[in-house]
Amino acid sequence: QQFFLKTLLDEIDFKDAKCLGSRDGFKVQLLQQEVARLGSEKMFGAIVAQVMEATRDGISEDVLNSLVKVSKMPLVGALSLGAAGLNASSEASRKDSAKFLRAKLRELSSSPSALPLPDHLVH
Image 1 (cartoon, rainbow, N blue to C red):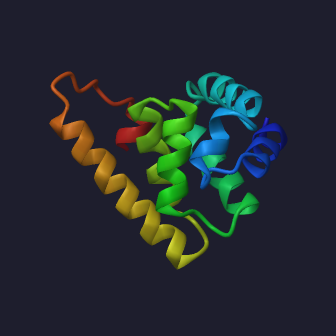
Image 2: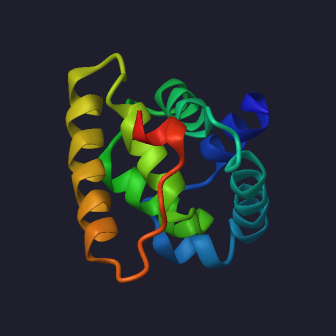
């Protein structure tokens, strides 16, 4: 599962929003399916953060936001990913993950239909 996710993250250019609709369309669909499949696992955030850190030059806030948007990741998954990024090996990745997590927590608190968070994410 990590190899497939790593391959998809390597192949998709998250910085070029125009290409996401045409050239990377099939890869984006596969990424959406993989995120939906992995999303129910307790270690979802850790798996994706680990793959992102190995695939790219660390974890950046821009790429996290693009990944969440492109993959149609639910808010709980985004929170899990942000929390897992706090354990990244590089200081820059940890800082960007913290910014991302703060933004997602604000989004959660302003949501009128805030879902209860899973126990593994709360702890």
